[in-house]
Length: 86
Image (tube, rainbow, N blue to C red; front, side, top):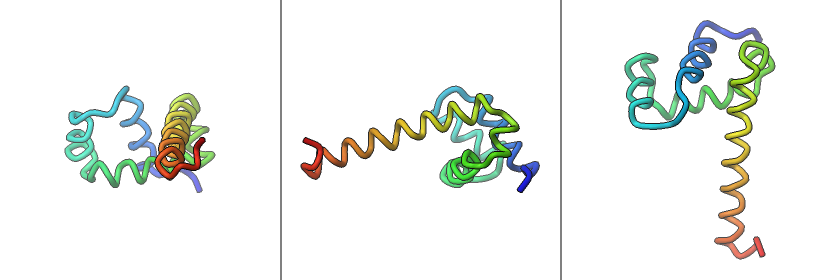
């Protein structure tokens, strides 16, 4: 499915921000009119589409790497907490 105007708006917005902070969350609310939780939900789904890669490959690959690293960190912490990560 091709990117919608909203999809491109989300990717363009994310490209303007280098890190996650309170100012970004406020801008999500004011500029995009959605909650930060909804923004990250939509962005996460968007990152898995080929159309997003075609639109901005460097951004999408960078965000995928960050997401994958966070998932690995979470899994490692979980393994340590449950005693399965020895």
